[in-house]
Length: 293
Image 1 (cartoon, rainbow, N blue to C red):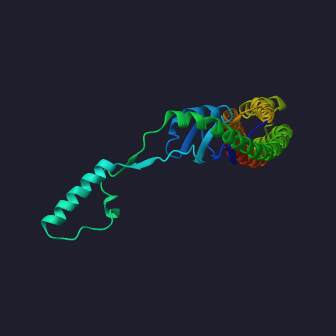
Image 2: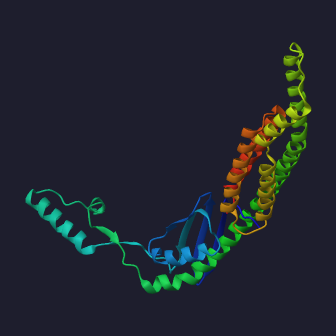
């Protein structure tokens, strides 16, 4: 079934005194895009995380937050003791040369360049953390999918209702076409008869019929109505498939093209009003389709 691209999910896994927390947030996007915010030392798992997420999410922008606490959590930052000692030696020499008291705290030195550096990640620690990360990630993806499935079902129900409305409006347009042709024939006959009355001339039914046929041919929208109905049926069927978002977006464009052609060909006010209603609903389908994976 169709899934929404919007959703969130959280997964927590604990083992051996370690706790891993994964949070997922997904929003609309034309392509798949994953942004990972991970605790220092866990960046080496990003490729595995992306591979696991891609198996479950095909489209949309996803933000993933990963945190780890416990013995398996990397410190991420450390003091460069040799650099700090060099700063202290320089400070001591400076104070001694000027007969100044030496500061009793090294806190002010911690902001100097090179004092606090990134810790070298432990490959073994990262590798050992993956089973716990994978477990929390699966739980987060499960909850994320539950929300996307529920919202997708609501979106599909709404779009199916809109499809039925478009089909009903198209049926009304189709039924109106013969009435438009007949009304045009009657108006044409009446106008021509009035114009020729002063001259004592009458117009033949065959002449009127030829003109009506030409107008009916120029304003024929039968093919457009058939394609419109076909696109609506296909739109409805796609809602039952996995990841139909791109196809739905394309069909919405095709529906709009057929509606524009019908509007340009028709000379009837009632049909023009009905086409406006059709285009309004097509725009709604287009907007909703952009929420579907």
